[in-house]
Length: 149
Image (tube, rainbow, N blue to C red):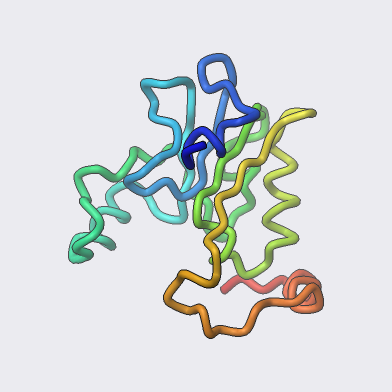
């Protein structure tokens, strides 16, 4: 099974409303495939500027960001009345300083029975493979201290 099929195993983009976090220039679901919104920590133009000198990123392919999620909550970023059937985050969770709060905020905007689909890199094959693995205690500590960065 390829990566996209795996991430969409319990999702029907044609009939479901989705949200993808941090798609940058490689979304799992394209807008032509279904109703999907994109959220990131910068606006589209800010992302293009930020990655303009990165050889592996084509700024012209950066998705149009619908919502900016920075110091606000995800609920604040998308508004009070919108709920999603599914949320996808590919290679995002490993950059989140407070995973517990992040997951709570995602749960707040998912419909009952909604799906969170995560692609998480295999630590054995990434550049910081020698970095110490976070423990459950690290996650709880970040949550209690409300770590932002």
